Image 1 (spheres, rainbow, N blue to C red):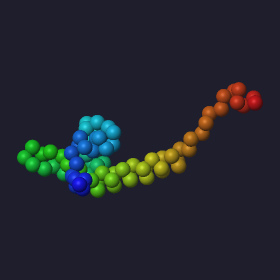
Image 2: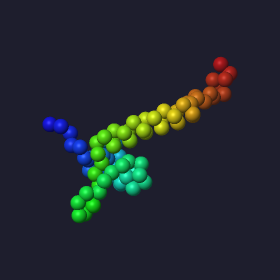
Image 3: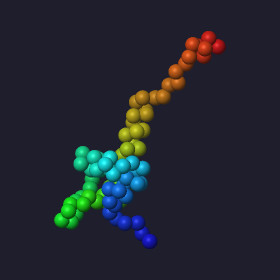
Length: 81
């Protein structure tokens, strides 16, 4: 069976291992494109938009890591050795 084209915010939260409230905030800020459907205005995220968001986050994280390399701190004992 093929995966659904549109996901609920709860579905997205499960994929991202976060809360529905956090996903709602991503949608409302415009970080994660979504649509409102139906009379009650339920949010749906297209699976392709979710994958694009994930790829953007990988790229942003890569830029952050490149700009802020991890450097182990040395202790006084390390510097005397």
